Every structure is written in C-alpha cells, then in structure tokens.
Length: 102
Length: 102
Image 1 (cartoon, chains in turn cyan, orange):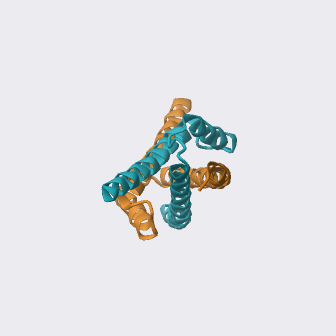
Image 2: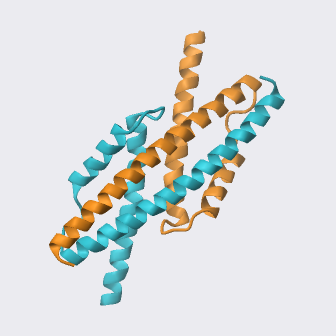
Image 3: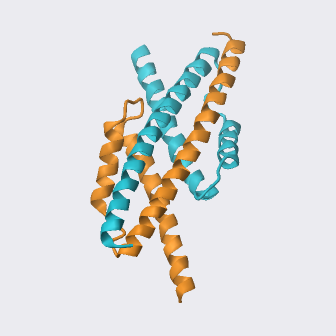
C-alpha cells in the first residue's frame, strides 16, 4: 500500500468512525433516558434503586451478543464505565430532588 | 404508580435496554474492526500509529452530536475507556505480530 492509498483509506475509515460515534452517542443517551424512567418508576413504587442481579443480567446479555473482535473483558470494562456514569447521573438527580424538597 | 404498574414498566424498560445494548455491542465491534483497518493501513504505509489530534477530532464529533441527558464529561469518560480498549487491542495485535515475525 502506498502512502497516498493509506491516507485515502484512513480518511474513509474516519468518516465511518465518526458516523458510528454519532450512533453510539444517540444510543447511549437513549439508554440513559430509559435508566431515568426506571429510576422514577422505582421511586414512585418504593422499589429498591440498586439491584445487583439486574447488573449481571446486563452483562450476560452483552456477552451473549458479542461477536468480537472486542473480548468479554474489554466489553465489561467499557460497560462498567457506562453503567457507572448512568448511576452517577441518577444519584445527582435524586440529590437535586431531595434538595428541592427540603 | 402502583407497585404492579412499576414492575410492568420496569420489565418493558429492561427489554428496551437489552435491545439497545445489543446495538451498542454491534457498533462497538464495528468501530473496533475499522480501528484495526486503520492500524493495518498505517503500518503498511509507515505512518505514525498514535495521532493525538485525531483523538481530539473524535471528542469534538462526539460532543457536537450529543443531545443529552449524558453531559460532555460523562461522554468523555465513556469514550476514554472505549478508545483505551481499542488501543490495547491494537497493541496486542502488534505485539503478537512482531512475536511471530521474530
């Protein structure tokens, strides 16, 4: 592969990555909105906010649908961050709410 | 909202999350495959593997398309992990390759 060919290929690949990233951002935000709905429903019904079993279900689903090249460990580390960020957002929302109730 | 209504809503939300997660896993793997193509093209053309400017472009694109509720800081932390995992995979591939060349 010549340098020119490589540069052209890189450009094409980056357009594809930027497009995938737009979809990822949209899906992550959609997931966050559903997590927020879940939080509100749990609150309204007095159900426990944290359910470790559900978290294991999430990983099971993720691993079951993984066809690589990312391996399960890499996906778990990415998902730990995703779940952690969504949980932080929920906590902030609850803290703000109890602040405004006070 | 009654407990029964909340439980039903939770179930629906979880089906939606599992579906989103399948799409996320597929997109993350598709992104990884393109990152691998980029790595191979760079290698073949003797281009530098690490380009910090490109990383900033990725964040710029991600933030520009973010409509929330995730904020830029949360997305940056998630993307740091995503980029880091894909970089690790590339490094492993290169290490294995140079091992088999030796």
